[in-house]
Amino acid sequence: MRAITPLRTANVGRSIVLLAIAAAVAFALVWILFIAHGTAYGSAVHDPTSFYRTLLDGLYLSSLYFVVSAGFTLIFGLMRVVNMAYGSFFLLGGYIAMRLQRDFMHVGPDDAAPSVSTWANWVLPMLVAVVCMAVLGLIMQQFFLRWNQGQELRQALITIAISIILADQMLAHFGGVAKQIAWPADLQNFMPVGGGVQYSDARLFVIGVALAVGICLFLWLKRTRMGMIIRAGVNDRRMVAALGINVQWAFAIVFIVGSGLAALGGVMGGSQNSLAPGVDSNWLLYSLVVVIIGGMGSLQGAALGSLIFGLAGNFGPAYLPSNYTYYAIIVSFMVLAAVLAVRPYGFFGRPE
Figure 1 (cartoon, helix red, strand yellow):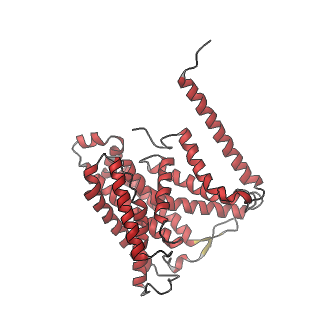
Figure 2: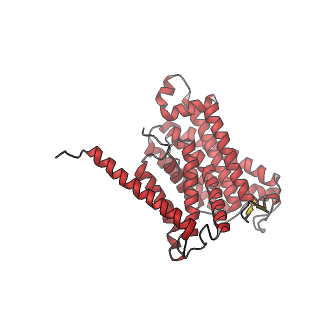
Figure 3: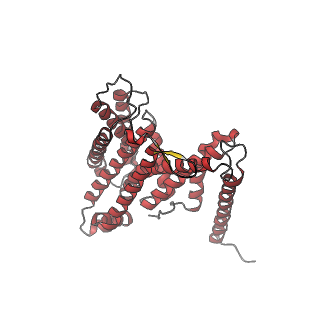
């Protein structure tokens, strides 16, 4: 009798996992499209308006995930630094923009929060916040992380310490009450998008910004010399350094871009939702999940991971039976587990 090799056994096990995942996906699609009994909305066939709105909400959330996680995946992918202070950059960038917007509009800290603003009072604080976080990221990389390059545990502990310090300072200066940044008045309306759905201009704006960020990063990484250095550094950092290229400059630029994107996400997230203590740790977790799903150091992976995570996070509570909606958060992490079972390095990740 022919012996079964370990490799063959592993292939059989992976095939079983793939079949189980395919069956689960097929069941979910059939449930959402045709059945969906006892859920918040009817099936897509019987209630297409709610389906379209849920889909758009998923695209909006995916867009916000992408803006934030794109910078994280650049830092994580090129420098192999798990920046545990990344969520704090998101929150601090939002707080800086919020404070500047209120100063520009002559709103005191004890006054009621403004409900609308002008474009200038939104864009200028956003730009200042992006620059501030980019500079802070550069300072952190140059003074704390550069001298510990290749020591992942030490770098993680350093960034955790920085995150704790920033969290304490934000609590002291901005308080523990949730605060919001006012959107420009032009984004406070709703636009018909088809299917009988009126959708928020602000959320469509976030989707547009995410597309613009994705295109700009793609062109930067694929069409510029610096982008080629970064991509080469992802594949073989030592060889890039051996060719006489100053890898430290690439590291610094990546940290600047990544930290700036965290602030941009913080401003848009603070405008659509709110800024409060604890939001930083949530967004750090979201960024980690997106990078794990998509693959370390891959912009395409960040886009795909954001899309999967965002859609799962919206369709779960909308189409789970009403008695089980409190399990919705599990759906997102079941997707993560399924991806890791089939692709341990993520969709676009590769082993070191």
